[in-house]
Length: 355
Image (cartoon, rainbow, N blue to C red; front, side):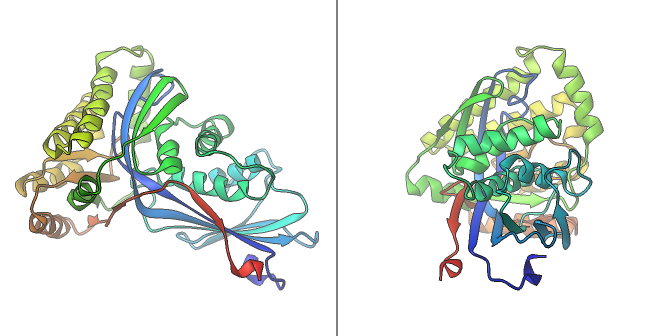
């Protein structure tokens, strides 16, 4: 492994990418929706990737990966056609074509729990692609990194995957995404005065429901219905409408309107399938409503587990009281402090490796 190598790395490449919350218009960034409108917010805690670069001497496995959250280490084998350990990471390494004369020690870490429906896996892929991009001539744009990350899931691993998560990780900040024809989209970053930015950040709460998001059977059922309904079916259109409402609310600094858009989106998710709004999420929403919440969004596609974004009212003590009650009501639930990301993917070279 990298820490067992005797030589000092010749380079250390660092990258970070934010996770995503409050994805109003989610489900419309898919191949079966064809056209989509999505509003989302990139936040910290971010995903972190660090790549130690060594000259390859042919003595052992060339690329070692440490998935710090799981305490797992493995040798990546990019030349294989299938992978049994962390296939998303192995596929990303394969796609980026690490130069044959280099050996790598890759460390990946996230303070956000996996399976929280906050696009952590997309942020990991974006950060890893961004770091590995520094090993070869030329550099991908943020948009190109996002699409490379999305192609890893859809083309290499044949997974169901929209585009909004990767775009949010690459761009960061508050985004309005228009998908004209899957997967082609334009990202408009929403720029607001600091007073609105800070107030939004203060009002937001992210509640992790205590268990990883797991509802693939429900999702497959929803996809089966939607793929036959066509892009203009009412269920998809109801979701699309929440994105421009959210964008306009942010520009106006109208948090009540943003809250209404979040609620409309969550209700539209429920109309796709009742199980997309799980029992634990409903209980968190009930408690938040009692404490004056303006809005709530079950993150991601919804389902059992995952997380809920809450938009609270003007009083900070009400938000703190809500968090205390949620965590006391269900010991598995916990608040994840979030901060709005000023930046998306960031990549830089470690100073120590240069001296």
